[in-house]
Amino acid sequence: MGDDKFLNKSTIGIEGYAGPVEFKNVTLEQAIGSHHYFSFLWRPGSLSSNLSYQQGIIEKYIGKGISINFDDFRFKGLITSMAVIEEDGAAIGFQVSGVSPTILLDDVPQSTSFYQKSLQQVMQGALQDAGSGLLKTQVVPAHKGTLPYCVQYNETDFEFLARISARYGEWMYYDGSALVIGDTQKDEVKLTKNVTLHQLKTVAAVTPQRINYVSYDMMKASPLSEKSQKAEAGSHPLMHLSSAASDDLYSSSSQKQTFVHHGYTQDELKQVKEVQNKVNAAAFVRVSGISELPVMPGQQISIASDSGQNAYTVISATHYASTPGNYHCSFTAIPADVKVPPYSNPHLVPKADMQSAIVKDNNDPEKLGRVRVQFFWQQQNDMSPWIRQASPAAGGGTGFHFVPEVGEEVVIGFEGGNAEMPFVLGSKFNGKSKSGYGDAQNNMKAIKTRSGNLIQLDDNTGSVTVTDKNGSTMIMDGSGNITVKSQTLVTVKTEDKIVVDAPNQIEFLSKEIHLKGTKKVVIGEGPAQITVDNESNKITSGADKITATADTLHELKSLANMKMSALHHETEGNTQVSIKGTSIKVDGGTTTDIKGGMVNLNC
Image (cartoon, rainbow, N blue to C red; front, side, top):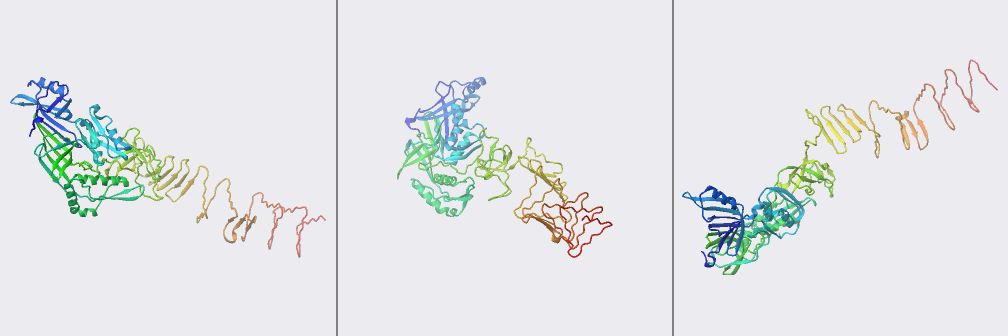
């Protein structure tokens, strides 16, 4: 299939090798979103079956750079494998294999996070040490919004870039010299059927289009929904046919719903819908063929048809040159007005398993009991966004409010297994932070706060002890007794009344006991009660009998008047009764009797 203008145009250059590279059967496989692979048979001048010679060649050139050229087409790669090929005991050359320098991004799986960054900033962060200068990059993604929280979890940089490119519908390909993330090439290669293009194959396909997406916005506590419409058919006539056929065939799918756990805002859910809608269009039409002109992934080609020129974007190409003058490539392409690559998938999120983290901030500005944590794989200053915690109960102004302290270890789960949607499942003790309440019988249960406030439940005694940070306690001893102990003051206060009820006895013990009533103090019940009335400033009692006994002195004293009244009043002194006054008046009304062994009247 060679064309004279391509004869002797296929060349290869190897870093450190000065002479022309004599090769056979070169193959170069290229695809968007992937590494590019090559292989060929190389005969470096005079060959020898000497092992030392062969080892010297391999040692000198393995890992070196390589340039493969098909006319104006240029590809730079790295030699990653060399094998000695022998026939009948004689060496005929080295089988050289290698890959694009994008492989340097595929070294070690790693984990990191990006907080409030654009997609371009995230990608540039992953490419910060790209290939130690061996890989050029060109990163201009179409997505311009801010990503709240983006995670690379146990992925190589290349796997991470490929995944987020697929998630946000970004083109990612190696153009032969640089890794490009963003738009496709605008330079167009024109192919003519039966001249530079052979075995053209066009495939039309159907795919579901109308999807109802649902999710949940936790900040608004509101369900979310987005309905996708028919995919944009573009200008290719077969795309319109495929779109219409898809709509007819999958008409029932519009009644079903797809839950998107990572569509936690309306904008996020809309992004999912739009990428999926565009990738549906990428599945409608696909062309393949064999070209005598070099084409590469990300490049546009035009093919003449009865209806005019149809433009396509190459998504894969495999180049063959059995000898320097015999070249062709097979390719696959999609219509050029498809806006996203066919590998796009808005549901590609990083997957993580349950793990521990350390609380770094618990002062939630929204008062939702959220925390920010640092995973053990995050960099020194990196943290999660504000994440919720699972609770035994949670509601508007109700529930179980226990927020873990800064520095404590918590166990993290992930909604839908998505590493970008962590939440706190609970807390963990560890070797440095022990509970201090364990025993062989597991009798002790406790709740203790940072300041030292403590609730202890002892299943051995059945007791419950509540202790504050200063040591004041309330103890229910499991035997029916309650003891309240305060370091300073116990105050019992209510807006209405307090009832202290004991069927047998109530004791008050203190150096001083003060009973205060702003209006009255009433002691007792019924006729025998004593009333201290502050408003009328008097003490009254209606008891049948009042007995007051003093061992040495019983003194009744009034600053003004004192009146003692009864049907029968008796004043008795075992030894003496003294009545003194400036003036004493004894009035019997009817009769006054004064009786004694001796009566002295001083008149």
